[in-house]
Amino acid sequence: MERYTKPAVLLHWLIAVLIIAAFTLGLTMVNIPGLTPTKLKYFSWHKWLGVTVLAVACVRLLWRLTHAAPAYPLRMPVWQQKAAHGLHGLLYVLMFAIPVSGYLYSLSAGVPVVYLGLFPLPVFMAPNPELKPLLKFAHYWLNMTLLALVCLHVLAALKHHFIDRDGIFKRMLP
Amino acid sequence: MISRFKLAAAVLSSVAAISMATDAVAAPLKVDPAKSTVNAVFKQLNVPVEAKFKKFTAQIDFDSAKPDSAKASIDIDIASFDLGEAEYNAEVQKKDWFNAAQFPKASFVSSTIKASPGAPAGSKYDVTGKLTIKGKSVDVHFPLSVKKEGNAQVFDGVVPIKRLAFNVGEGEWKDTGMVADEVVIKVHVVTTPS
Image (tube, rainbow over all chains, first blue to last red; front, side):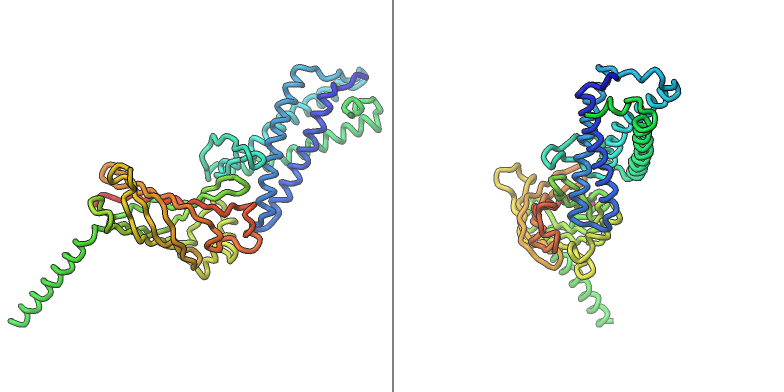
């Protein structure tokens, strides 16, 4: 069976690791009560991870647009092909929407992002207390949506591997 | 009648004496609290964050004709410190940071105000004075710029301080790796035309 290209595979797993790290760190840091140096450190790291996800997502999208994904096996029902395609599309949207919402949330709170503590990233929005709770809400629920979709994505991959045994999962293995 | 007259004369002369005394000092200016701000900029992992003191009173006696007799003082209400997040605002009032329960006010009192050499007359001054935060007084020295906007006068002072000199950030916050020692206090005072 035709596999994804090597860079596509690399980008997939790289972004997967980054997203899991950013997501876990995000949940951890907001559950630290009060104000501690660790909490502030995690906030910064979380933002750096998010910015990295956004950068990798850009590269990934460019690669995907210029390199077709391998075709689905013929015996895979059309509705499943469409569902898989739709789910992949949504995951792509969230790979962009989540870091962007987080970035805007940070700007609305008056905290610019300095990547790795070295590179100040653009501040194109003034602190905005009215928008802040909306962006917080959006960032949180986009993430919860991502969690649900990633679960579906993983379950589908496992189903193809262990139940259908159609080799779909292997196309993305390193 | 005579005694009443004497009393009136005495009152009048003392009023005159008081008004002459105030004339001798530069006239205090009326500060417009709505347009004036006192902000603190600090760096957290190199990220500049600006927070404001929402409540303060500033007194400025200033006459550009005689800057040497100028005086400035500011009283800041620590409880009004706003980082933009209620949870953090509550935290910084605690003992490790401002200890507002024991030290509810910060203050600045000028000792000298001198025209900066080289700057256009009436535009820049060198100010020295005592800054007191969390019960600790430190001598500070900073440039003050003055400009006219319509009938109002605008004073801008940028005061670099070190937070640890005032014990702001104790315990685990003493580590300046997370929150830098250097803090800049930006004072922007607008006076209303009197």
